[in-house]
Length: 218
Image (cartoon, rainbow, N blue to C red; front, side, top):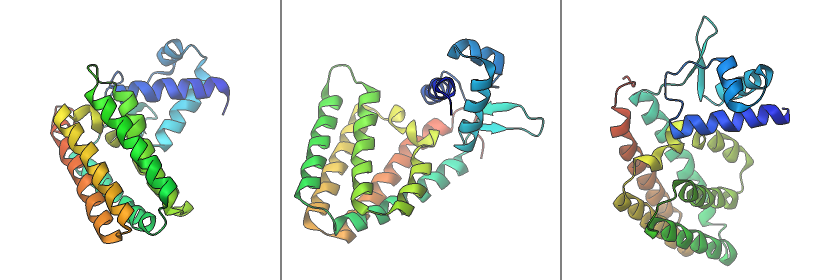
């Protein structure tokens, strides 16, 4: 991919995640080229990449639209994510050392600081949350698992979950991270797995009310 294509990809992906490009919006290359400050060819390449990642869907008439997610789609993504992250944390429980635990603790405290700040920075929160789950996945030491899970957690419905949280739900998510860390410290795979499944399921139910808004379907 060219630098211009990467630029267009990051710009369009960011606009989809923020909602600036809403589900169902048609993606017109000429307009997007102006927005991204590149020619139409890099935009076309970026759209293909976003299509492969399920951010964009192409119709039979070859027109591209920001993907719309039905409630069934959302439930499926979170169910699959829960299964894979549960397996990841089980593997991590038998491989977690003091260094990993110390890193998880630092990430958790950084997350708490973001939540308690007067002005909540959603991007900083998302980065800390992703770092926590990525470290568990890294500790699980499975390239195959990382490949499968990586495709799921990059889905828009997962990335946008934090936008549906209020401060109380954010603190609850933080507390669940603390509990997962405690289970890893004990080296208890069953406890860690149960906590992770509950963590992902709660995220699903926080996301579902937003999915009931106009523009989604069963």
